[in-house]
Figure 1 (cartoon, rainbow, N blue to C red):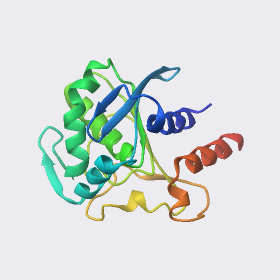
Figure 2 (cartoon, helix red, strand yellow):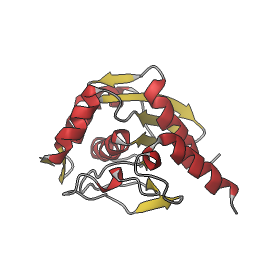
Figure 3 (tube, helix red, strand yellow):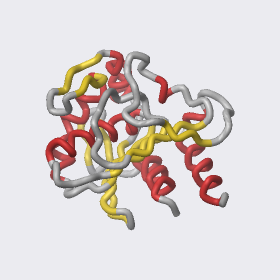
Figure 4 (cartoon, rainbow, N blue to C red):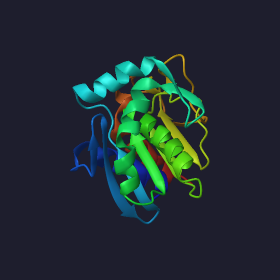
Length: 190
């Protein structure tokens, strides 16, 4: 199993498994895996997380990141930072949709606080998280015509998107199960 497929599966599990970190719109599981300790962050699934998405249109300067980021994505990470750091050294941060944007900002925050550690990020259908500096590898996936990675319009992705699969539908292409299926197909091909 590839690291991307494992991270996509953990991103899916973050929606339904009991959360190791549950602070406002930031809900995550922590799992020790073959690729290291993974922090998998859930995406939008209730009113609290929907409000974080709505607040994402407002830009906010984050001095600790030396970057302008969506306010609705920054606040949940700041609120959960103590719990994240208390969960032990994180090697990989992942998430789907809102969870992917939070994963990008979390990785940048951890880079700021723990400069001696390089971590990888795997984001699936993540909205734009701003002009972040990430010290480690970042894999940002977009399936077909998933529209979420093109939002909010006044921000950009910190790294180029990796395109998966052919377009099916705007809504269907955003589903985490379809990202997993596309990664399974990609893994089977030479």
